Length: 178
Length: 329
Image (tube, rainbow over the protein chains, first blue to last red):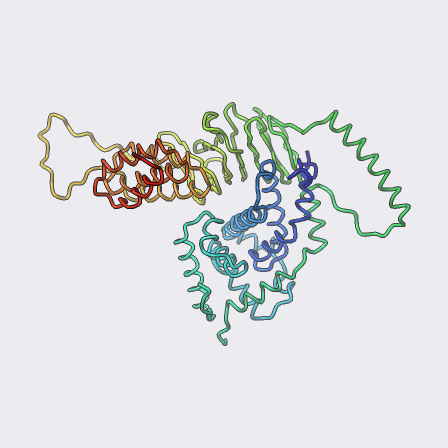
């Protein structure tokens, strides 16, 4: 059986149709977690749909397909960010194996926004994921905690740490962001 | 550098991302990777010709699909059904029933166990009588929720066995070490000489596991008992264990898995606990029986027992409310 021939969701939606209807939003979420990198977002989008396919049989019980896809995207992205922090991945990047031309050039961005995305990229994986969810998607701490299976207290600590790093890198952080 | 506002700068980036469409080339590549085909390029055909081509294609496809259904069925290798494949993913049967994946990525399934495994090359794995053994590689595992009576699915790795009750996790097996990271549900890790270690969503466990601690030397019964000193404390479960248990119970409650939460609390309450921990855990158990499971008989009995054990307990008001709601005598 191929992915395209998978059993229909809610009688009329095949997996291919699910992909067609949701690809744009999954790709955008992936772009956010990847700080604008298109190649990265493409890989994450691929992995998200592969993972959704794994639980496809039980999807017809899901009312909140958007919530499920967001949760899967966040966790796939976080996993990938963690792996990229590994020494072998860094070595590969140093050796030029995975170098992408400045990904932020591909989006029409002001220099300040590019700098901000680079700053976001420099954060540890979990802090970056949590802060992206807050700033890009306006998620509350409780929602972030639920999505990533963390405690609310820990999410709060991660946000504070991330903001501390950003401040010490010379940025101002406006009120209400923590 | 002038100090710029980080949040405003990210908000501008957010607006740019929100307007970024999925590029056609990316969409084409994704379809090729996911469905093993590239959509036809957008070439304008004359209507009649296009209709003719469509009719011919559908006839060929229908005949092909019918032939495939009759003759092929899903491809099975070493007890694993290939349900999705991309990038030259072709599991091959090796020595001793081992399935080797040398290229691409895809999804294998063990239908009778309700297990599906998404993996990228290189990886090798094998069907075992009670589950699956991962010999090498990185595997995302999803197991359909199972009735407790069916027992767990077992995923064997070099350092022990992951016992799965219906969940989603990633495991990395490096041959003599590895790790498992749990996303949702519950798994336990069993290794030689150690008790089953349960993981909470978000937790990672690595193997090989450190050797179990030496048991405390048993006191010589013939020796004179030492007088109790003021600082001696009984060997109760540490407070961190109670905290971890409460977190796990909260996690199960948010996912509606109340009977599992009750079983977990029951099991812990059967052990030696500090009075304060016992009261909290017992209250949690009563609250689940009352408000989630709505089992009046069990809840009323539990509250009576709780109040006998903690006559001046700190949850008196809440328990009075619960008993009133349940109509306990």
